[in-house]
Image 1 (cartoon, one colour):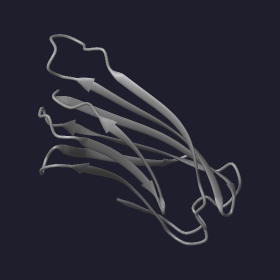
Image 2: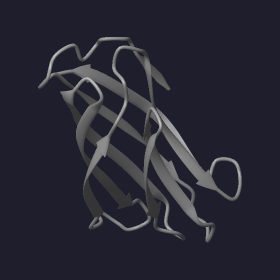
Image 3: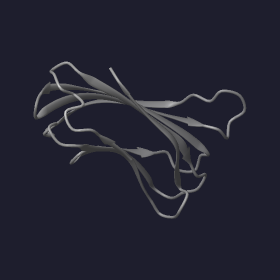
Image 4: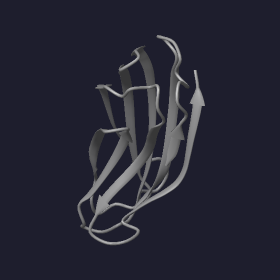
Length: 128
C-alpha cells in the first residue's frame, strides 16, 4: 500500500500512474485481483488453472478537489505454454470521489481461496 500525501494532486489535471505486478497460482481456485484508491475499489477475475502473471497500469487524474477519473489496464498472461502465450487484457474507466486535502490509500488487493493464490511482487507510483 502507498499513502498518497495530502494535496499531492493540488490542481486539476494533476495525476498519478500506478503499476503493480505479480503472479497467480496454477490451481482451480477462484482469484480476484483488485485495486483500491481510498474508498473506491475495482476488481477483475483472474483465469483459473494456469500459472499466470498479472500486470496492472492505472492512470488517475484530478478533475476537482473531490473527483478523480481513472483508466485501468489489467493484463494477464499464461506461463504454462511454450514461448509467448496470448494474454488477456481488460481496460476500464472509473471515477473516484476522494477528498484530496487528506492522505489517500492506494493499494492492490487479492481475494482467493488459499495463501499465495495471488502474489504481488511490486508497485510503483509516479506523479504525472
